[in-house]
Length: 158
Length: 185
Figure (spheres, rainbow over the protein chains, first blue to last red):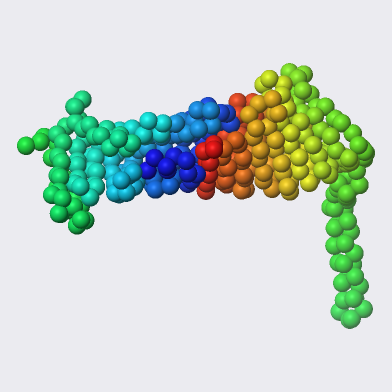
């Protein structure tokens, strides 16, 4: 949710390296768990860029990275990927590597997905991003839990 | 061999053993006399400026109400010390604790109990709290093997095991990292 950004952000990790300065990059490892409002991210490592003491960008990797968030319309979104690059200012998230996104209205998988959490717009594939698979559920089926997760994506595409 | 001879031999053996014992331990007491708790000098309400032997630059400044020096190993112990540690711009980190210890060469400081570290007022506000801190002034390094809490504008960081460079302001938390960041209103 957009309101999430005004909530406290809690970060847990096994190890951290950083700098005592307003502009810094903090590297977290040893298993990272971040929560902020409805946002919940787990990964192996994370690199958080601070500008003027504010987290502006978070790059997650390994794991896979699992990102859960409730959208502004109240629907839940769960995403899995090998890498997640989250611009906390623009709310644009770039998922890369075995990406799977689950929402009540359907699911999507591919190698690269750019998701604007504020507007809800999604751009996927491109730049050698491999084939994209999308499954949109009919409205009456949307009430049921999202379809079973997509079959593993075959990189060559059909 | 009647009982008198046996008794004489036993007493003779006892005398030899105790004599040998006194002989072998003759040197120890003189070594320990120094650290028998008696200091060779005591300072009251003092300020000490330690200089780096190699560069001649200020290593640290120490203020305390009372300090004792141990003649045995030439270390110094003090109550409620305030250490002022210069960073690369000659701004001072302030480090306080219940007790302090300074090595003979002044290249290691040990602070124990209610250790408070406050960053230079000129720079970004940084506060550290822990129960043990070891400082190596000539390398600008401070370490703690135990729990630490670090407060900066907008965030509180807790963890276990700290290594920080007071000149470059880099730090590392070894385990159990917990950060709470609160966005500005």
